[in-house]
Length: 127
Image 1 (tube, rainbow, N blue to C red):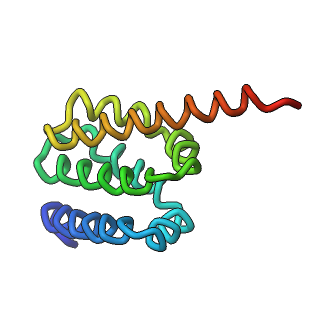
Image 2: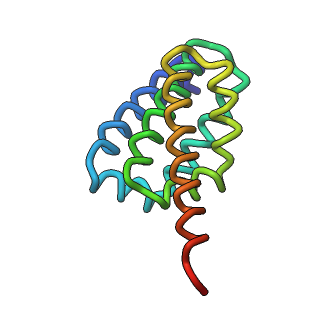
């Protein structure tokens, strides 16, 4: 089989490719249709306990793709929350490398902002 280091390199390159795809609206739509949010959250979870440089890079890149997917997308928040992203992002803010911490913090702020806006809107709608 492929050595762990080689798998991490391949995974890292795949996540960089997903970043490029998520940078355009058609790519974001395709990633949503392919259930990428849950998959990216799974990547965060699998690499959470591992403190290797390769795992930290994988987490950072997964959060970068999630950040791109969050742009102007209300659906993202519900998918991310259903997948368990919030606890993983909080953990990444505490234990990740500096770039991962910054991206995770930004993403948590986006999730909080969109969530609070949705609650305000739903409260103001009359039955």
